[in-house]
Image 1 (cartoon, rainbow, N blue to C red):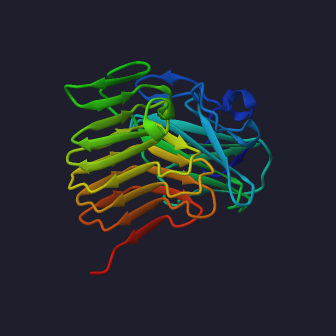
Image 2 (image 1 turned 90 degrees about the vertical axis):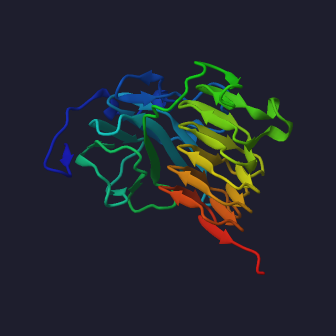
Length: 315
């Protein structure tokens, strides 16, 4: 029987029943909602560790997974919707539960309803980082959700594959899987001066991004940067700025290494960034060393060590 958490009801869609067929998500876009399937070639998921289906207005978002120190599944998902437009989010777990919390407590959500293994709620506010914790199990009974606003600044330089646009100095990664290890030495794309990198919604980069000597450099998009190698996924070094990093998700898959690092920089800005790195230890989310006049705004960090560490050398 339906258990209502708020004094409201929603219609029961098909998405209120869990199926392994839906963990990969689907490619869908309209003027309100965008979802993308896990691209072919991405090899770091394990179906046994993907415990959730997530749907937005009835369209499935992708589920990504890892395993943490307690050998429990860590699930996360990403999708986009038009900020200010109402959407209904359905989250279905593959097993029953007694209690749940949607965190943080001050989220702008409403019409929260539970039916069976499904939790459904509505929101009009994008760029809220959300976590649902089940039965107070913070070690393994949860899912992270990263609902971003649709990025209308996407240059849309390609519908598939990779292009470099010389006029705008932009590396553009369209939706799909991109293995930087097959294209660059050590899988590292180096960014200098005012070069830009755009990782589109639905794109997954397997590799490393490094900004060195950035002056007007920008890394942005709604995609995922992930690797299982022992390398920092994003480093910004010796840059006078501005250097902007916005909208992306970084995932060190069982990588016992810092995830992002800013060192010897001035005027660096991170905004709406998600970091998931579950390996213990040394999987810091963000390390800022010898860096000043920099901001880190609306960050989500799941790490098995320091979330944010500020470091400096004494004079």
